[in-house]
Image 1 (cartoon, rainbow, N blue to C red):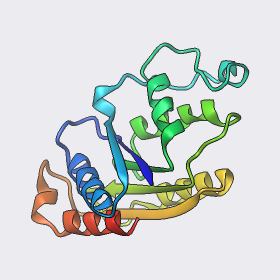
Image 2 (spheres, rainbow, N blue to C red):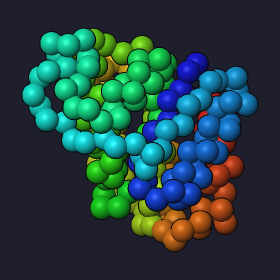
Image 3 (cartoon, rainbow, N blue to C red):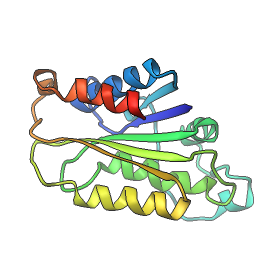
Length: 175
């Protein structure tokens, strides 16, 4: 399986990045091809809802980095979005990325499965993200690979002092 992992933390080296790397390591150990892309390496503007992509084979009118990422999406069998949860949901960067995959909505996707890797300082803040993944998978007829949740991790690098990285490797192996 070819898995695209999009990390949606604006901080390089974040707990989210470490969680995504652990997942990717486990998935590679299981024989999957994994590409990890980080939000801080790309300029992705919000969707303009202009409809250009619907008339131009999924190409977005905006001249930012999303068109290259859409090529990654087109090649992926699975999509994993890794995000911190700042205020009861995935980051604005994650939501922007999700909104922009709309460009391939009419063209279609090779993706068959999706999952979330979520990190937060607080427990019990994942309801909206779980619902979003559920609805995304339901609408697009993708298998819901589930949410991996790492609560209680707020400070930079704190995830290293938990079992979450090993658990994420195991989640990746089982993916």
